[in-house]
Image 1 (tube, rainbow, N blue to C red):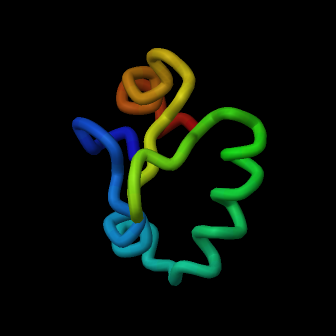
Image 2 (image 1 turned 60 degrees about the horizontal axis):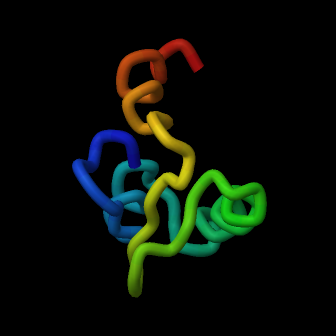
Length: 63
């Protein structure tokens, strides 16, 4: 998601991670409940934490 300039399409996330929708949903639910991501329209997700995308873009390879 961090490499997208705005909200990410769930289908793009599935393609990049090479997993199906059920696998993505398993991780989407807890991240949504924790307030890390949120729905941004039909089939779209976005980060809710300020600067998280920039941090992951810069430091994500470490994790």
